[in-house]
Length: 78
Image 1 (tube, helix red, strand yellow):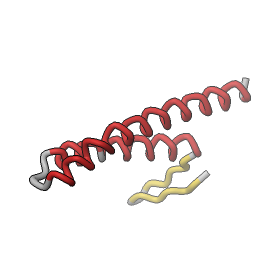
Image 2 (cartoon, one colour; image 1 turned 180 degrees about the vertical axis):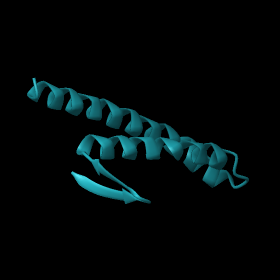
Image 3 (cartoon, helix red, strand yellow; image 1 turned 90 degrees about the vertical axis):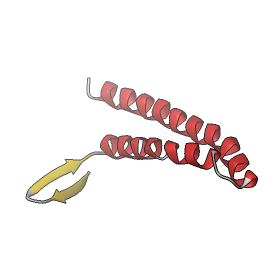
Image 4 (cartoon, one colour; image 1 turned 60 degrees about the horizontal axis):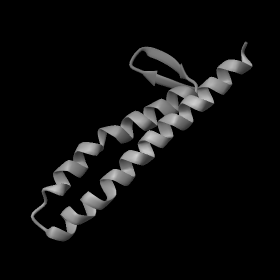
């Protein structure tokens, strides 16, 4: 567990919260690839076109992994 203090509120974040935040944060970076795909330098546009699907697949795999871990964790509480 991690203690997070924001303003006058205190929240406890468990591991699931942190993993979700990481996947969500990574997903917010996907529009950056779209911008780079339109870059005037061909090598930068090519790099973005090559790496965007890899990054998207990583996010998708991370979400699947997190779902499996959450399911396993939920079963241990039953």
